[in-house]
Length: 516
Image (cartoon, rainbow, N blue to C red; front, side, top):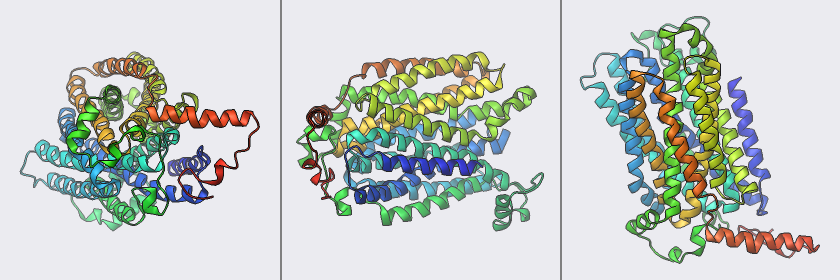
């Protein structure tokens, strides 16, 4: 049933993509662009599976990996991820998004295989190195390669999508994140359950398949390492698909490149071989880019502050308050699916509002989402140990709002203000701030929750307030080229339509430079 719902959501996303064509691209161009972003996006979704499978393994290992140990391991990875963008963003701007996503997929696949090997040795009692040290190093290396993923998908998007289309692409970006979370938590949990030495009750077809293909019944312990090795195999498959289908720009796919009306449209930098130092200096001295990065920093604290810790909290209630745990079972069993569905809705709602209501300004919907999160965190604080249903709904709704913010900032605003030439560097720095925020919350909540879970929502609340303040500050911000496009093209078309003028002359050429 869950897989059917996700499949229907994917079909709806694809339908909305083809329905959203404000620039009047030819059908041939729309199809080729779909063939480009779909495998790229699915690779990114499975990168998420190869990232948050650590969370699933923590619950599977139980007391063998404590909250504090998990917090340290996750923080090592996310902080590495954050700082990696200072190197990887400029590299992807030089080599292109296609090579970047292949590096991400294959590098993460190797690290997941090694984490699977470490888990196997640990469960067999053969791991001589401290578990926290081993997993911290491997997860940090995994996140280093993972950091190529986000900047690569945004780099490719910058050449294929006009600014006036990017709100909806931001929604697609948020949808891909949501699919990845579903794969990580629900598919990951299904793998863990299927890899148990003893399975209670009637086995599902998937459990029988995993049990037989990996001969689990011949072992002496649960095959928890499969939660790492199976995503590794899937990443290798998608990397091979990307090698064949992915193109960095319309020109490489035999279409003419076109002006996307982002920040690069008003620069002379397009003609230059821009150095890494130049790109970093230009971004770090741009107050709008700094604001975008700080908004996404708060979203990193909030997003992983909920996704990472809700299941840990709910499972811990099993030992302290059985009735509360039983009231949380719906959310526990469907956590990945719920995150997926609400993330898709949040991404599309924010993207469409941004493009259709606020003329592609990203600040207003981000501010609205942060205001919603403030209310929901207050509700969480009051329902924490009292009402599992209210707590679960509030946690899920926060992920809806925070995916909306993240898809607007990392997936859209960074590309808008960075421009095509510096898209990967700009989005990398912004996405890096997300994971610096994630690393901070991982350390802080791991420590605070060990003392008292009531600190959990209270720690997150000020970051939602900070996100609201910063989003309001960038309420009216748009790249100069976007403002020019709206004034000279869109308003001129509206004026011409008002006079009853025919648009046939202007429709003889596709905005992508392809004759109709």
